[in-house]
Image (cartoon, protein in one colour):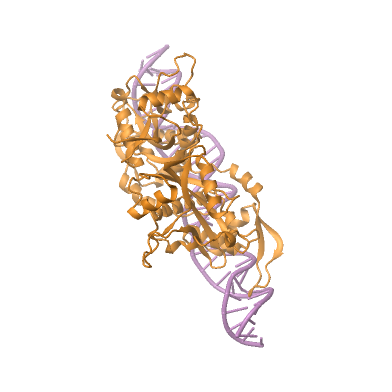
Length: 247
Length: 247
DNA sequence: TTTTGTTAGTGTTATCTTTACACTTACTTA
DNA sequence: TAAGTAAGTGTAAAGATAACACTAACAAAA
């Protein structure tokens, strides 16, 4: 492979929706630089890497994601660069980085991406989650390595904005066949607020890209719900006609 | 000053509203690397510079802006990183950069910022616009240096989004005292669409942060308009209560 | 002084969107 | 067969949006 640039990196914030647990999680990579049991989350960082000199930022992000997690065919979105010269907080972190890359590391600017995937049985994670990789609940993700907690905050803001402006691949988070309840929960988890069930359904009713399959759930301990799927083409078509609001 | 990093830069897209000409412009820096008269806009680039090793990206952007244009006290917003390895299109551009910085330049990732200012008599530009700096109309800004036309496109998209979500310092573009007509024109120029005057004013009527001064225009060849000012504090307060929309 | 040109300023109606709100149905498990 | 759980459904009031045309006030030109 080509030469890595010691002052440029990409980092990937992977949001995973755990439909079972109804929780929004992130994928983190565990290092062993702080051996102390009580080191909190200081050993946890987002999957990331220095950028090679002949790859674009996007290419780099996809490469890293594949190398570290095996994930591919997911959509990454660049949302921000982080470049505080003091991003590397601890000497141990710098030493770890220098050893890891075999390079002298001073100041690293990172370009951050986020992606959304669903967590379920057939989702790659089972194979991918090697000893170093795991999902943690988003609420418990404080005091991560470097400035990664700050990056998390900003990624969430970006995700919420993008969700509102519907530029987003939020449907990646749901199973192919989903119920309106699951859909609503997803919005609630990401946006951090609750919606009225009837009003939500009324609104969804108008979105022609959410199409009912004739089919219902079964095996559930309550009235089985209608299953829906997301229609990409109809979605793209519907996005043309927005451009309303000002002020 | 400290050491410049040869693979990291910042670029500033400065949008200026020319209230007289009713036009949205950008500030560009002219080089002389393509002497041909017909070189179009290939000599024009956004104010930018390599990043010093001890400054944050934001610091770097503000420094550059001040050094190259004299502008300060304006609000810059980071909107995107650009890192295609082929961003530098021509050999002449690379040579110019190497000579300019006295450094070997291979691949440069740039972090792009935008800002909004008004163009008027007392605006710094008169002094600042040295031989190298000038305003060009946004519609005429094709085929700029490097990938700067692409950066312009993206900056405009970001600006429009931010304007819609009202995270934005759009009022920097207007004189301290402005008419509703000027306000409407600003929105129209940025968003690239026209609004109904009565509906626009109805909506503005609800924004308590746009406050009428008792005062009217004078010296104009038509019915003089009421002057308004923008109230920062009220604006900040009003932004609290948004968080509506989903889907 | 009158006319012309120019922008300011104003209200109503029809349609659509948003919000708030409570009960019955269908299934599983105990 | 009872208990528990989520599914599914309608209405009315309030608010937002969109479409639409004329008069008023000033400067400049005639």
